[in-house]
Image (cartoon, rainbow, N blue to C red; front, side):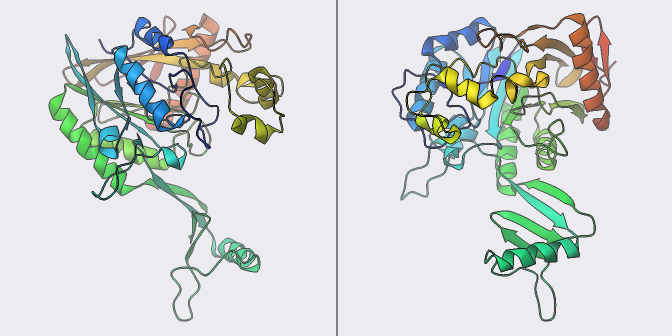
Length: 395
């Protein structure tokens, strides 16, 4: 009844200037192609991601224009933080759906801002910022501190009193603390959690269902597990009234959690993935690879992937995903089906990246992966007739 996806693409005819920083590849497609998303059945798109500012404010605004003209509901970017953060709504015959879009992965100039009246608000995306803390033993901490002091990179540590050793320090925006068990912790910025929770609470009163989409590349112990800060954020959004949490960005599948009966998709991987058939790229993409002026997009693709032997083209997990179909009765989740798809691993560059239903063997492999990744959250996934079925409370 309502279909949404992450829109990690800009639509324009190269009128805008490219930013000095991009989300990786400078993403752009012909404006007419946005209608293909409507043809595919999508109603809503999440716009907050690391490519939102690849072509600056003008590129983002042109994309907003073309997406709106196609009739798609869009959320996650705007001319101010308030606008980028606000929920957008889709009215259907079976209910009203709200979409809130955020991103934890982005070049900092992409972040939308506020106005205090004397300067303009900054256009951009709705950010989910977080803080990472590395816990070290006392011995590890002192060894690092000594090395940084010797290199002239440390002015002192916090938590240091008369006769006491420092207990924490921040170096190059990384925080280190002394603890008994070494490891890495992360937590979302309270300001962003509180701001989005308020939007979710309001949206839950204005809509029958609320989707929160986040573009989050960051991982936990590995690329198949979510980071600690995002689990905290996702739970907070459901506590505030969200019905579905969906993550894009990692390019691989991650587990599914049912928190208070609501689905959290910690990553749905890719649906359409065609970042190799772009018409142009600015010099900022060629130069870091040592490529001379006059190089073309094909040369860039070959150099970046070492002729398809490294990176995305060589990684089968990048080209495997599922289409998730949650079913609700009222606001209660009563069913969740997962349709395995393939995007054409090892196909030619001109053909890979298009979604197609996976064959029986690959379908089993994909659902087996999701079963294993979801188990730590207490979620059971079963394979029935080539489809993944998440066991929900009503089954």
